[in-house]
Length: 187
Length: 258
Image 1 (cartoon, one colour):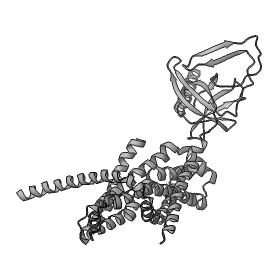
Image 2: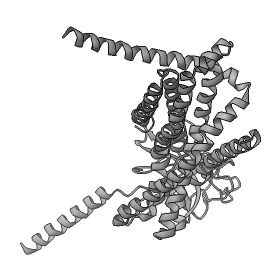
Image 3: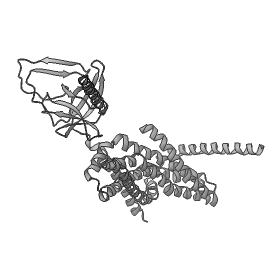
């Protein structure tokens, strides 16, 4: 074995190893979904986010347009504050869009689905500063063109995560109430 | 009675003596690394014999492990109608556990034993003493390049094992059993995190590479310079490094994913 052949083999070996690492990073893991372009942050309050995780998908019409950036429990409002990072190219979402927590498949992961609103017509602007304070700004008299979500916007309309136990509980209590009514009628 | 207690004490002392010598050798090896880096020819030779020659066994076993995972995983998951998650199962178990651990075990058997036998034989034929006579430090000239080569090779081999295993799972799951092609990759990408899973796997394989080559080099250097001593040292390399890998794997897993 000449030194040259040996060096070629070692070079191939190292290149193969790095190619394998590259394949694992890009093809197997979620590195390719870490978006490089800077998006903007939008927040929303939910009463119940159970199952939602940081880096869960944020979708609109089923297309992923962002990710959950962080989930905080707001001590004052006693509800969960979810901050989502929307990719920069989707910069024209109406600011009265609503956010709901859905489940992918029967037992799948939770994700946030945004539904576009009509675009706000009132001239109030809700915004949230870094400490989580929500302020209402009255812009009456200014130009009231339909606004879109931007950095720091707060989504007002939210729908909570569906919890199976709560659903079953509701169903059972309804069922029991129905039984009670029937008995009342018999009496 | 007294003799038994004596022999017990002696074996305990022997154990600690070897442990101490092993760690002193590790320090010497680390000190020797800078002098190796300036002579890359030495590392390339060792990368060839430690890394390139282990390539075939690693790639072939990786492919078969992946295929078995695909087959077994499919049979279990199909009961729950979750065969789409096959990619997740194969990728996570390979990247987190099987890749580093099985590669380290094979590496101990293939490269570690060869290192021990080579160094032990050098000692038995007094090549190492001859080097010392010529004022060449055998730790820097012989042991450190082998140690560094093992440390570099292990993560590369483990990455190849995992990558080929994922392809093996793909071959069986998608090719033979009819799991959806897109679901295999997309669910994998959704569940495997590059920092939590891939990088932790690489860290594991780095640790295993260090431990396996360290044990192999030490056993060779510490071998009794007879043919029997070399054969015992080779056996000990495989046994001790396999045990060390499995034990460390538990500790690392508990630290990383616990």
